[in-house]
Length: 88
Image (cartoon, rainbow, N blue to C red):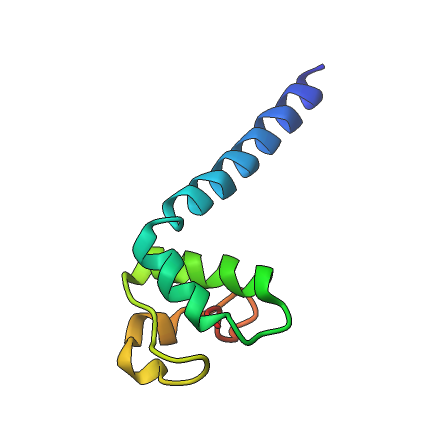
């Protein structure tokens, strides 16, 4: 019984945190900048998700469709758990 309760609490925390990141990243600034940034990619949903997360943290999205990350160092320097760039 206790194990089921702990599992339920962990699932609620995980779902809640991902909802918070999505809600936070949905500002009009981030959504407009990320829609331009991700407009030419094949994996648009994934690009928009990670761009939104990065934009919410850095308050910046590099201009253009690709590259130009030197204009937003925070966006450029965010890494995923594997050590590769997190932001598209």
